Length: 148
Ligand code: RB5
Image 1 (cartoon, rainbow, N blue to C red):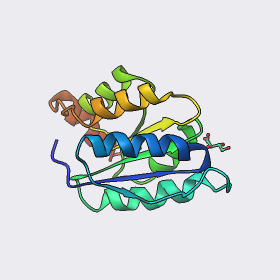
Image 2 (cartoon, helix red, strand yellow; image 1 turned 90 degrees about the vertical axis):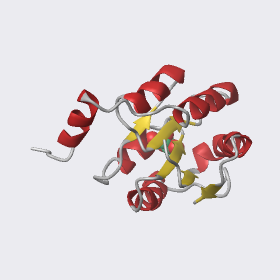
Image 3 (tube, rainbow, N blue to C red; image 1 turned 30 degrees about the horizontal axis):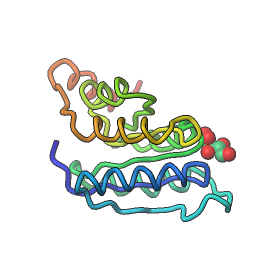
C-alpha cells in the first residue's frame, strides 16, 4: 500500500473519535491533513465533510482518508457518491481487513458513537497495514464503474 497523504474529516458527532484517530495515525508516523470539523458542539452537516475529503482522495490514487460521523452511515453514503471513492464503513478488525483485501477501500469510515478508543486504534492499524489482494476482486471493482 503506497500512501502519499492521509486526510481525515468528521462531523460534530465524530469529532472526539477524530482526535483518537489522529493520535493513532501520528503514532504510526503518518502525517494527517485534518479537514474539520473543529469541535463537537457546533452542529454541522456530514455531507459537506464527506464531499470535501472525497475530492482530495479522488485526486491521487495514493491518497487515503478516514471519515467519521455518529454512526458512520451518513458520511460513508455521501463519500460513495464520488465514483472514484470506495468508502468502507467498518466496525471491527475483520471488516477493516476485508475492506482493504477485497474492496481496495480508499476511505475508512466508522461511527464515533459506536466504537470505543481501543476499537478505533485497532481498525486504523489494520486498515493501513493491509494490501489489496487483486485478482477476482480487481475484476469486481472494475465493474463498480459500469453501473447499469
Ligand atoms: C448527527 O446527529 C448524526 O445524524 C450523524 O453524525 C450521523 O450519524 C449520520 O449518519
